[in-house]
Amino acid sequence: MRASARARRVAAAREAFLSSGSARPAAAAAVDDTILTSWQRSQMAGVRIDVPEVPYYEDVDPRSRLARCAAPVLDRLHDRLDDIPVSIVLTDAQGRIIVRRDEERRLGRRFDTVSFAPGFSYAETHVGTNGVGTALETGTAVLVTGPEHFNEQSTAFACAGAPIRDPLSRRIEGLIDLSCLAGDAHPMMRALVQEAARDVERLLLEDGSERQQMVLQEFLAACRRRAGAVLSVAGDVVMANKEASVLLTPADSALLRMTAADTRRLDPGTTIEMSLADGRSAEVRCRPVARGRELAGTVFEVLPRDAHPSRSRRSRRPARVALPGLAGRDPAWLDACGQVRAAARRRASLLISGEDGTGKLAVARAALQDVHQAAAPTIIDCAEPDPLAAVHAASGQALVLRHLDRLPPEDADALAAVLDAASRRGPAPWLVGTARAGADLPEVLLQLFTTSVTLPPLRHRMDDLPDLAAALLNRLAPGRGSALAPDTERVLTRLAWPGNVGELAEVLRAALRRRRVGPIRRDDLPAGCFTASRRALTPLEALERDAIVAALVETDGNRTRAAERLGMSRSSLYRKIHTYGIEPVDPTG
Image 1 (spheres, one colour):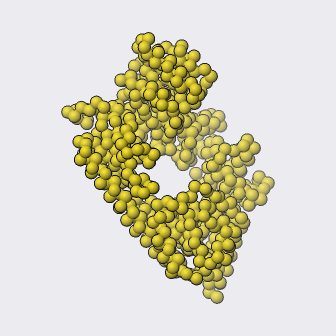
Image 2 (tube, rainbow, N blue to C red; image 1 turned 30 degrees about the vertical axis):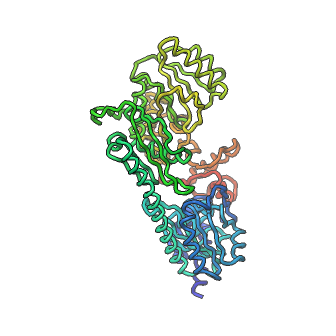
Image 3 (spheres, one colour; image 1 turned 90 degrees about the vertical axis):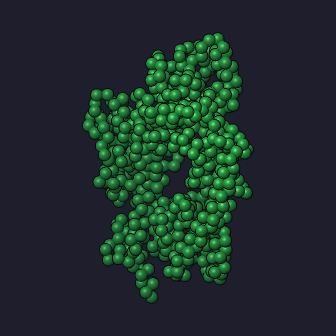
């Protein structure tokens, strides 16, 4: 009776919350702070309260390292809970269900009706308060029973979830959950999943130790084989011998760590070329270390092409200074600028890669001006019609081939032949190519370049955003003294910037059209800055999204008043907020 009385109080608090956006004080006393805070997050995320939109993902891997290490723990739970009406669930860090084991077939069918099944995501942003999503959101074990769920169709169930953390990095890897009908819930469910999560973490540690031991043995063998720089990567663990510590900068090591993720496709002993931060090229021998079907780690042996053992590290390192006219102080950005400057000084043919909008052309121009004080380079866009004719007619000290990844494949051999013929006729211009990061360029194009540099995306150097914005505003509105207000800067630093600096420039250009003079406020920003939509919108959808954002701004984030202003129901507004990924409006800025 006491349990059912509490359930009635929680149900009353939930109803009060859904109708007004906050629980009445008397009712809220029955609700744990963790649950109430989760309700607020769910509402701000626009989660539907009737039938949630539970997304399905095809790429959930039931043979992952997490699933393999969790299997014996799930087996033990299955034996302990035999004949008890409960389902045992394993999810990944995104709340996507990897495994569900049903102790009772009837219960499994009930869970199927609400898409609580492998491949579906029960993240809090999709389903609202629940044992999977809320535990992942808070990073702690939770038990969610009956009306404590945000979504109506989940109130028939109870679920207890505990996050599984990587024992070394403490990053959440997944979650173990026990779920049943609300009437069968027991407080011990929370303790059971906590114990199970600890058991999985122990097995992850043992598995990681075995993997790291394998990589360590290969690392030591490489150190014995070669009196040079050796570095190994095994997950979050990086080992380097003394020579590697002297030779490699943090940017060099970071590049090798990114390379390690792609080495599973390489044969042992494969050699690749790498441009070091000091401008030299190096030969890097890659040795992937496999553990069955999985990559345990990678060992790299690094040999500079023109090593000078007697030269001190301090004397051969270029100062970390940005190129003229380019804003930014992030170490990875400065290292990239240093590599481009070094290539320009040596007139080494250079391939600059990076995501769209990272500033590949701007970096090439700045390096040419900085090093050679030369006239503007000849720039040819390989995405334009007939780029070969433009290359034939090119002259000057530098030739920049933009968008090499968009060059028709049938033109690659012809382009290489034209450049080769030009180099035989006389002094060749400094050759620079640009391409999207990760683009699969034909081998004949790659052979045109002796070194390469990858520019970091804006989301990896967010500390540079204020300086970048100031430089862009000065360029877009010279003499106006435009600047970002603090609340505007906070909004911009929360965005992912898939279009990088180019996208930032477009946002500021739009804001300047609204705010001719004075600081740019957050309501001067385009509506897209307040959304996190996962897909491109149609023109009509974009108009609707902008209208919703405007209504929320005008009502200080009050969704009931915003829905009235838009002439739609509150549930429709919640659904569209979720669909368009509109972030909550904070009236305090």
